[in-house]
Length: 321
Ligand code: SER
Image (tube, rainbow, N blue to C red; front, side):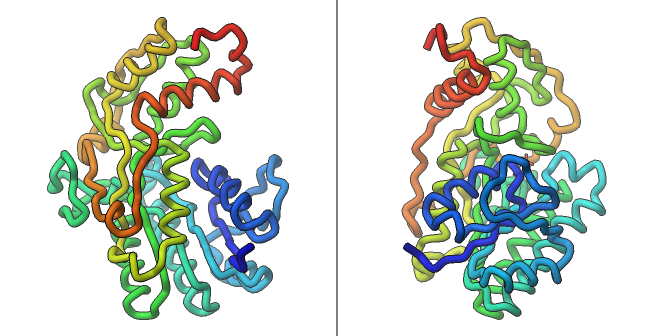
């Protein structure tokens, strides 16, 4: 159907593991090569071990499969990055530079690089944060994403490398687990709720953050990558939004399905990170340029999460939904 040969780096991660499936459905199993630093035992398509800090290894795999698109998803997220900032910078930046350089040298046509709401800091408006708001992040993760966005634009301007990027909000999905992020609570909470356990939330109850359901995040990524180049006016990274809510609003939404659900607030160091980020995002540029439109609101994502997690934990029969 298509001659795309796609390499996904970081394919075992929260987004990568789901994206791989969608890409294989669209482009064919043999045309999508998964890679990560370890092999997932569930993986049954084409897979290569790649440490993205090893540019020769990336080049070898690009040559082997004649790759013409790379999705580079490997990164250390916001909270984990603060434990070892130098290591987070090393992994996030040098892996990205390796991907850009290999792509330039080997003539890879198109690159996807995920950015994040973490590019914003306390100098950006909190509500409906605009596309061109001030970028002054105070996490190493955010700093690496701002630098990555600028390098993306540089490679496009200087070498014509077609790099495309989204500033993901917190991504919520039942298929995979997040790791090391500040928005992870919004996934963890569902697992506790469905299993009938009390959730100890590491953010305060009124801390609003922008979020997106996995299905929307994957669709946005694929739609952006499929858009005609002339439509892409932002070569740093597009703001992307769906729903925005606080932990207590999420807990209330969950209670409509799990009425006995209990949440206890025990904010930790991640609270400060969350407070430095937007509460909601203006994604008009993405809507205008390539027709972005989210499908899931808070209630829609809650319903779908609960359904699938009940299924996963074998709790569907006799459920009250
Ligand atoms: N979900 C990410 C994090 O919390 C933000 O991009 O680190």
